[in-house]
Image (cartoon, rainbow, N blue to C red; front, side):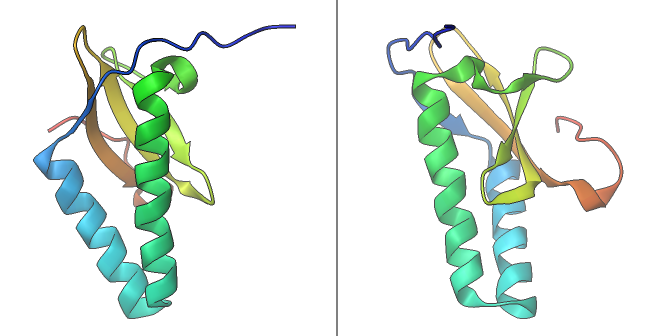
Length: 105
């Protein structure tokens, strides 16, 4: 049986661009679906961020030292992040329908 190593918690630092991307996604869901879906998206995002603080290796290697992890119940969204010595940098949130690959800004 394989075990996932749980390390000491590293705080997550959420980039400004990621916060803007989250606000856009929430607004889209509020306008086109339901406020409850928008709230659930934000909740799933924060749950995954907290999980990455203690298990940053959970995501899939991406490129340029980044990793990505899908957003639980919102599987078409990915969180892109990078583990640093002292913290976890949350670089962005990206919906797969956007076509082009996520690029760090």
